[in-house]
Length: 231
Length: 231
DNA sequence: TTTGCCACGTGAAACATATCACAAGCACTT
DNA sequence: AAGTGCTTGTGATATGTTTCACGTGGCAAA
Image (cartoon, rainbow over all chains, first blue to last red; front, side):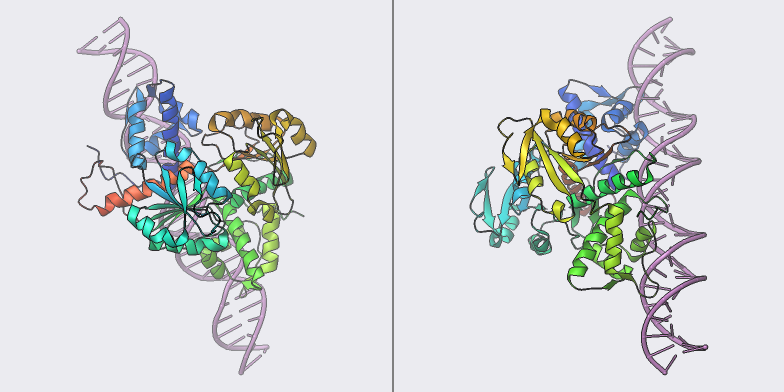
């Protein structure tokens, strides 16, 4: 079916696929049936060539002279990104940020659900947030193993993050999304992505300060986020 | 005051500077006075050469044969990143995520403070979160202009994000940190960074799915997508 | 002063990613 | 059946980033 050994895609290309996927979902809601790389690039802030190249890492999904069929392209994106496998996720740390993550409807909408939550604070243990019962840390290992959870969100204070990470890895978690402002150490076979709010704000601060200092309008900047470290 | 930029640094280099900065702060708390690029790289998950190159974009802050003095290097990072200028920030959208952002102590710790918050929901307007009074949207423009706020956090639903962004830009905001899962359009002189949780999770999902496919060595599997072996 | 070692700073090489530009293929018309 | 117009998919090219490797300056001890 597909010519297998396509080249490996850059990490940023994968992230752009997510955007394409969402945009396709939106187009489909609007009843749009076909889309060109040009059109898709306008909607996602990319370029037409970039869109085509990104897709080409995984196959050829369009028809020359016509464009891409929204429905099938979306299906391919879903397949590639593993959306729809419905990976269950665990959350550690049910503070302000953790609660916000539990309430974030973007996850279920993309097929990801937080099915377990853990916290070390006895006052939070036992509470129910969005249908999820907060469990104590000593149930983390057994619960995650029993439910075969492979992805976890770390939303604990920086000081606790490395320890929690180790517990999760010991329990069998393969993918971590870290929100603590610290650089976590993980073994090579564990995937790690980090969302670091301070870094983002400081990056903007840098741009702002630079533009003020230089005073010359040097560069338009459109940055995506983030930083990922494969083990 | 400003040590002129020597060359333009890659965006990722700036983000790494933030990590160096935090690591330096931590070292200083521990009483460490000097640090080598080697040591710093271990603590941040970078490489020694990378650390030196990143710093070299902005100057030469170390002493050959010795390393860097923690205190002065930290000061330089602070200067470069614009930390300590204490940029005031505005928040739009005081839902779950917005509330978490108001409570996030990483911002004030790095010298950034959310000093104004806005929401379109009348039930939220007037409430006080972390000493900040939530104001209605129609006060956004005047408030931001009066306080000369240049940075704003957008934590509203995707559908409202572009409109809010426009209001902020009209009010004079130069830097935006967007949390809505949508690709915002901004003029070239406005800086934009985005934190997109779905994209991060889907990236991990992609890695996970890929590693599973690779592991299943026999490889027929459902999809027949190209895969490459992780290093 | 000289010796020895150390770690920075940096040109150059290697690598990664993005952009260009066009042949190939499809739909539609004549 | 051939022509026209459009858009993909992809070599080739350009640009950007990371890594390598080593000259340079600096410290300490003899």
